[in-house]
Length: 130
Image 1 (cartoon, rainbow, N blue to C red):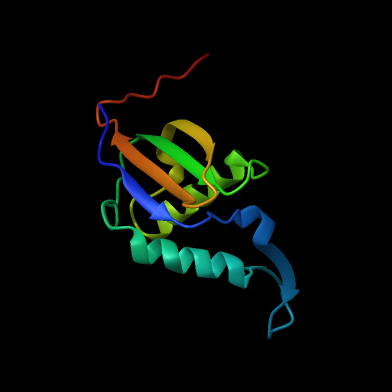
Image 2: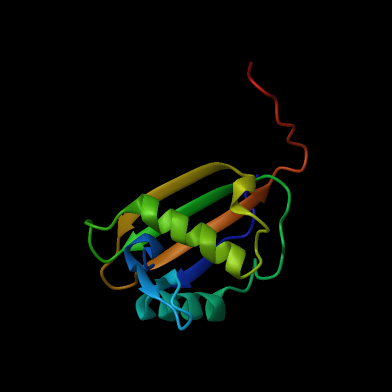
């Protein structure tokens, strides 16, 4: 069962490549994100509509197609960034509830984007192996 597809235009930024450590005003070492990440996050939050504020707390499956401008970009970093952004826009409560990720990588030099859908698995029961 597929749910609605959301499309976010622009080149997704890998959050893992945009962290840096610095000292804050109190002299404490902190981890910060740079302006490139903050700009993409802002654009993402402006565009997301279908899943915004859904606050999905049930286990879910994430389907994602990432269209990069070049083949050199990493799919795994894009998926992690997407999961963080889905929490930021309150689409999901916690990405630890993700049971499966179905991710595909494409190249579209003209219209880079991320297309995703979330399928809740309300009837899912976790079984321990042991």
